[in-house]
Image (cartoon, rainbow, N blue to C red; front, side, top):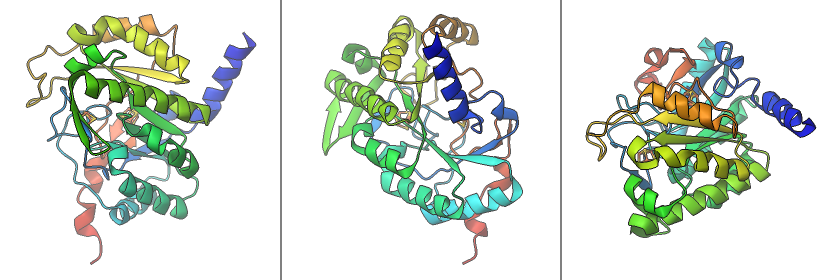
Length: 295
Ligand code: SF4
Ligand code: SF4
């Protein structure tokens, strides 16, 4: 009992100013996503690379990609207009860790300009074992990893391929590498005090009944929150003809998994360039920052 309340208190302290992790904070604090990560190192069958990474972002119009310097300029501009901005997140349009140099540089620049900023990033987890030490060292305390399954046989139906250490993998061998790296990565981050949220895309016919096991396994590795998301069949993706998972089905699964891990129920699956309070995106005000930069 003491342990549980201790964990809950710790979770509340870590998330107090993060609108995505704290229900109380989501009306008071704003976040911005910086689209500095164009490349992806895997291929999910629910993804259409014309859109932002589906693992964290709602399929929408592709956001224009920024260099680290442009990201700093955009941050400075947004911060001046939105003083309640507390969080800078990297959520695509590809995978944060497949673009690590640019992501790292962007965070370093913003940290130097505004040391109080809270940073978070989302990833498919392939490169987590490699970059977990740098993530910790950079002071990133919130990471979202998308874990859809634990078994390579299921993964072979969800992922088309994985690019890893210069090689191209498909089928179960691709899924096996990805799943192992996701779980190892989560464990390393959590062991170093990072708050790990796990996103899971519910693709009813493929992983629907398997998701409770996923939630249990990531909890055992130290994840603190689970976010079960509906499949949105993106045009042009392999799963484009799949039925969209209904809210009701997702809610039922969340209810089932709630006893294992707290469920995030107010995630908006924001665009990779989302800005503002969670429920009032203001990114349209800040588009084309590139063109407005001097020089
Ligand atoms: Fe698309 Fe998957 Fe890569 Fe995200 S991780 S950009 S959904 S292939
Ligand atoms: Fe927060 Fe979810 Fe939006 Fe990311 S996608 S900023 S976690 S609400």
